[in-house]
Amino acid sequence: MTDRWTKAPRVAVVGGGLAGLAAACALAENGIQVTVFERRPYLGGRASSYQHPSTGEIVDNCQHVLLGCCTNLLDFYGRVGVQDKIRWYDHLTFLEPGGRASIIGSSALPAPLHTAPSFLKASCLSLMDKLSIAAAMAAVAPKIPRDRGESFLTWLRRYGQTDRAIDRFWKTLLVSALNEDVERVSVTYAAQVMRESFMKSATAGRMGVPTVPLTQLYDRAGDYIRSRGGEVRFRSGVQSFRAEFAGVKLLSAEGEEEFDFVIFAVPFDVLSRMLPQSTAADPLRQTLDRFETSPITGIHLWFDRQITELDHAVLLDRTIQWMFHKSKIQQRDSGNGGGSYVELVVSSSRSLVEKSRGEILDMAVAELRDFFPAVASANLVKGTVIKEVHATYSPRPGSDVYRPRTQTVWPRVYLAGDWTATGWPATMEGAVRSGYIAAESVAKVAGVSDAKYIVPDLPAAGFMRLFG
Image (cartoon, rainbow, N blue to C red; front, side, top):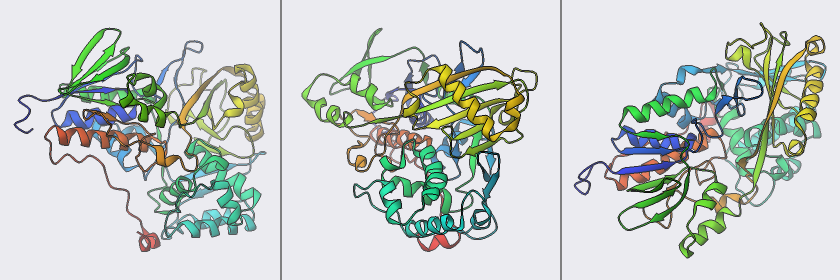
């Protein structure tokens, strides 16, 4: 610390999701006094788990996965000591209705050709489909296209993609990664996802799945903060703030409390409600009003018997997009004497928002039967549906120009969240990056001149090194 601070500055982090926890842990490591305010009784934000009241089961609010290219998320997991709670997979299984499987994974060939042998064998795509996909991949290999206001679907059509290639390859991967339909997605972020994860190296494309309920990961972050003199306050919502010359006062139902700095790591719509009613806040409020959201739906099903040996699968040509066999991945009893507990994911699930729980469960079981014959003879013991109606911001063409930076008009107030200007879309990696960026800004003002938390991107391998 510099002489300006006779004692460690006090920093409030509002929001106990990934962005807030990443910021808080980084600052706590440097001896800065951190207080995390979380309105829920658990950590993790949208990447959390809880005991579902009607089923009595511990469920994730939605399945979250990471990729090998998520360098900052992996750094965060290593920092708090949960890296051993991730199971890694080197392949994806694409299932067609009827159960025919295509497995795409890595080989010994140099990037970006490492998936080529399995890709060429994939029966879910025709030779024409594969040739069109290869042509589009070649177009993004040298560099990521700029956002010129064009949707990724328009870009795909311009590059001669077949209907099957769009439906079974591009939509399958990108709707899940970006939680938005390809006709509403920025070319830049769609290309970034494919280049960083599918093309850059074999390591970059590995998929990691937590082997424990999500909140167990982030409870360790809470322990990390407390062990370094910080504090985590549950059921503690912040209503507003007042920025002053010497500090920032947070206003809550409990009253006022002053801090030297505040990082707001909450969703943009929540932040908008917290902003003070002043002309200084108007530009940020107007910026936040320009964001749109996209929903995601998790469908949890408990069967009385095993329905598949697969840990996970991509499901083609149906409403449900992914199956995660949670009782196998987490190696826990399904609660049904050895049956299957699976979570199905529907990203960009606008078609399900108005549907009832019963309608969604009936649809899910019927569609699951199309892929796994054992479902026909299995009994559904219980099931539930979790809708995150405002799960992520929508990465529409042109949306990057109004993603705010961490600094605000108030010198002691900073922003974090996957919707801020991180250079990444709304992912767990983007959330952690935003937290690290905010923490770096606060730490440097607080006198930690060498504060550097952001981890560089994974380097390119093979032929991709020619493009940087």
